[in-house]
Length: 248
Image 1 (cartoon, rainbow, N blue to C red):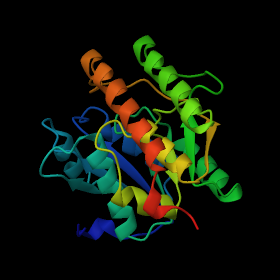
Image 2 (cartoon, rainbow, N blue to C red):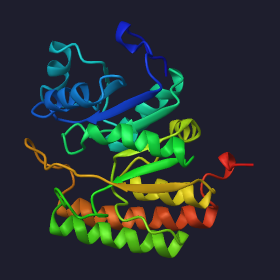
Image 3 (cartoon, rainbow, N blue to C red):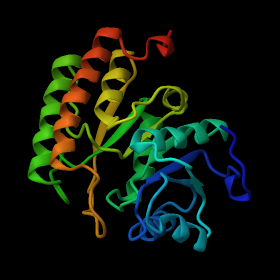
Image 4 (tube, rainbow, N blue to C red):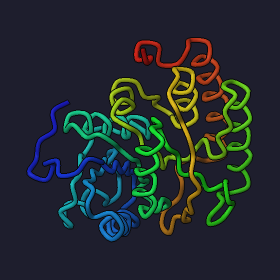
């Protein structure tokens, strides 16, 4: 994929990737939060063929946005962001949800951690200190299930396996640009990275509840999510993760 545009000039070591689908009520505030807390970092919005005014809001505010011609889903939108990060030669990347749930104020702390401790991915977890928005009861059941399954498969406890607030280094950018699950990717990529010998850690963060719109994950999708992702995690365990990208 070729990325063009005057606003796509790299000016920092870290790229903030913002997947957005029907986030017209949230995207402006999300960018305001980023510009307030982390103005030194570049960002790109991946508009996943929204059916509302998300693209118009981005264009009116001159936000840096990639407009996908078809809806790719969360996995495809985020992977587009990683492909952009790779093409523009960023050293680090972080995902911030377009609904304003993630607090950009933690990005610098997470970046410092990944550099100091030389880990490959650092996850912002709302469940280490159990403060801030804790998600719905139904989703907590799924989160707990994946926490236990990841522990069984890898021996590693990840308290917030569905968190999309994750800083990754250049090597993981390269992997995710080439290989990224299409649906609900977070738990599966954790298992794949751990099975491949990459280092994954967490730090405590506070998250917000979305102000506008609704989550794309319904009850029926949650059941599909748990079944599909569980199977994918088991396959990743048996195949050894990102086999071709394994560290030497």
